[in-house]
Length: 355
Image (cartoon, rainbow, N blue to C red):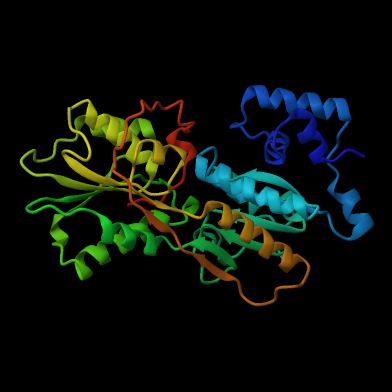
């Protein structure tokens, strides 16, 4: 009987992409969807979790739930999770959680989501999603990229990452520091990473560098490249002094940098800027940023979940990974970046904390 891995191999895509096609994920490229459906038909593949569980007592399937789709961070995170699951003989099924209506369905303990051997929940806060602050299942699960005192979790220390930016950002006399972020209209679909970065950053500036808190300005500019680009086109700082920018993601930094260039304002000549994530384009444009151990995060979360499934890990899981600061020239060389070339999604497909 063909497996989901056979389908992925024949279609020349990842197992995660096949899973998304099976779940009618709208973010799958039409070309990839067509290849997957063709492979499914050719192999006569039929997902059958219950048949697997009858023979072994386990489905050898893991449910992956996320409210964020399509961006580089979560693509890399998902690939690293899939790698560990595949190496251990497990397949995965992807469940996008993009609306309150779907959240209601996920609240049902009999939902198909909970019929697998375990769950990985990415970038979501259960304390804001469910009244009892946990998933309605006895199956093992682990939260990824979310700090949660009540549930097993693996996360990157965003508070420390914010402090790293505070330690390294350039401060200019008689000038302000601007924090550029986005917003999420529904807190249920946010892990709070932006807030943690902001708190760490401000703590470092005010308490350790003696910077005047009144000169720190938090601005909602949007989450996408396009939104931050438009903001950069109309942003009018005091031109008499250099200023500093902490962009809460590299994508926000990319758009802002190009938008400012339309005004003839360039980094590092007129201002300094630090991003967050260390995405693939960051090194190309010389952006100073905070590097997140994305692959390590995904692999560790999958490994720990499998240990829980096999009763090899009984203690409470609360693992934090440390980011590191990458110093570059802010703009070493300039590449023309476009909304399409960065592979970005629409704002409503992203989930961040309102600030």
